[in-house]
Length: 353
View 1: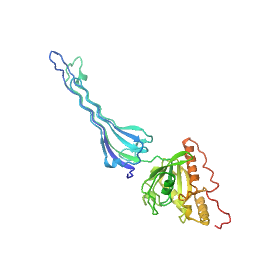
View 2: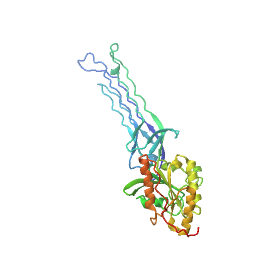
View 3: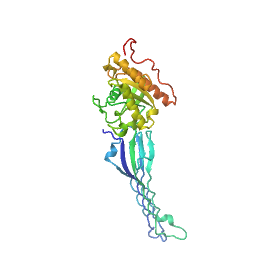
View 4: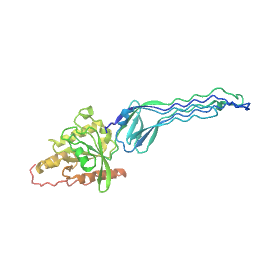
């Protein structure tokens, strides 16, 4: 299934049915009087957040949603049937914007949440409603009211507990594949990941959702590379796991490059709790690893986790750190991150730097 996180849709609710002008005409009934029924109400346009969807691809193939019109009223005081409503089913985390793509209408953040986007027109009154003491035989009725129409934008922001950020080939997809059952494409060239991926990680009986987004490069906020258009998918996370590949010549610079792009994007990403990890450490010897770990610590201001998704080194520790932040955030606490005074891998002090 292709990934699509933004779609433009035209919606229109149904018009109300017209009221009927009718008179009772029966044998042996001398004064029948009016018996025109009311028109039916037009259908509404609803949006509903459902589980099991993580893309807006359905709205690429259908961009027009129109509810049914109400049926006209009929004689013998028969009211017309209401028009059928139509429901747009969207993934949890979808935001609905007006045509300007800036004015937010509703944020669908919970499964089962429903919102009426366009109200159907009311049905018109039949001539029975207009009968009074001075006008026993009114010969007019109300037309139905018109429905509402609008062009809206759907924008998906995935719901996840933790987000993975970093340069291309920092090992984000490999990390996701090693701790979840997600199977993102993994290769040794930049921008292997072209769209966000979700996976559910489990540690000590606790589950949380991880979101992996395409890598950022310098100038991403200006559209360089894939750009920063996918950063919205980690806006809702409670914590960011910033992966820096140990293959990078300057790990400190690599960290600052991504950090700069997060700041340029905004969206509150720089205010989120951040856990930093030096990934792919299985390719380095002990001396080089110690050097790069210290360089990264100096750049980010915290002792980074040292991990390898291939060998499993440090994976449990970093997952527990993510879990602790998520649990603390879910109960409204602001506890400190787990103690990182001891790195995942010990070094001998006599190793030359």
